[in-house]
Length: 241
Image (tube, rainbow, N blue to C red; front, side):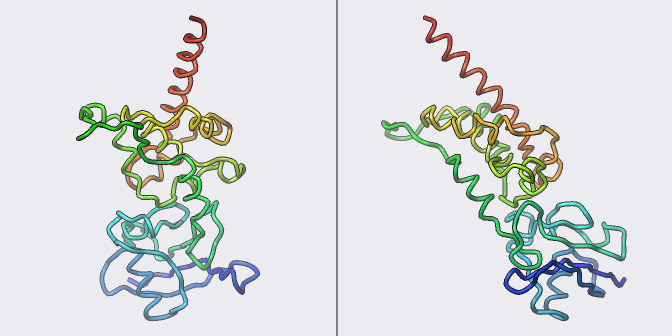
């Protein structure tokens, strides 16, 4: 079957405005959108820019807008779109560098700002710090993020508020502060306990819907809000004693 790929093209070094370009492509066999893009680049236009790496929905590099929905190109089968016309656009909420390649720096900067790793105690144990499987099970899903940026791109708060760090950054922060091995100071919570953090979320759950790894970052935000309130009550009661 012959497909028409309508791809939004833009080169930040030379184009004033983005524009759509159509490619007619007939794959030798039914494959993924990513495989079709590679075929178009290899056979028709070598200047077409897009990201990919693992091709197995693990690295998150090929996230883009496919017929109006954010998904990974490597896991989206062309025939599943049920249309001979396929429209491809770059992720929103991020500046376009070229064609389907966006600048991921704001997304990574937001994530880095919350220190998404275990901050150990000053006197760590000699061998290990054991933790029960049932404890890990409660926070494990938030480690499955593949950093594709889909949640950041679909978020209406990110679109309107440059202070907002995005859902996965907050969910990642919760994953570590909920881990009893983490010993970060309470001052770290200041980055999250703001309108640019946990309290800025509109709770529309778009991030849950687009996540290719079913992380459900909005669940982490809700859990973090509850944890903030509990911690404030705990500290208030300490002061009362």
